[in-house]
Length: 239
Image (tube, rainbow, N blue to C red):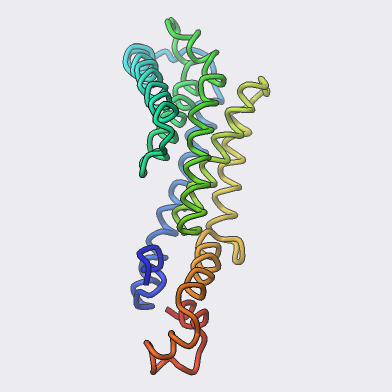
């Protein structure tokens, strides 16, 4: 069976333990990330305490690092265009981490009294367009080649949210951080807990189509004789 299908043929107890652990992980993110965004966006006045530390982290460390990372990322995009060859992987980590850290910096900028890189964050929605295009091209390629998996579904969700949030910032939407927190919480809950549209359900439907395409019923019965009374799809769902 192809490597992307391995998760579908592991023993059922292992899958149940894995599903419980993943649900707890996603639930923790679903709870504390929106709370962090709301608490930070609720008060835009400078912090009486810890302002120096916050200024050091956001304005003196993260902001210059993001500017340098932007230059490196654009050099990487130019290299891809010159060679006309997509990388084998890792694009999602580069782009998602880049935009997510920039959004967090924008979230805490109002709490920093003296800032030196406002020009960069004002131009960031435009600077994020090329990396987002690269991210979507990589996602389309991976899905077309290997189908949808659970983690790839969350990647699609992350790309969609980052694209939406960047558009909201470019449009100057008022109280955008509160809206982003609500959208993030709702989208994470829907794709994690609602049956039928959970990320795992998309994974099963996509991989069962691939399984039936590469392993027809006749070959399936020959290879797995004791499961000959059930279809390949049902076997995948049961395991």
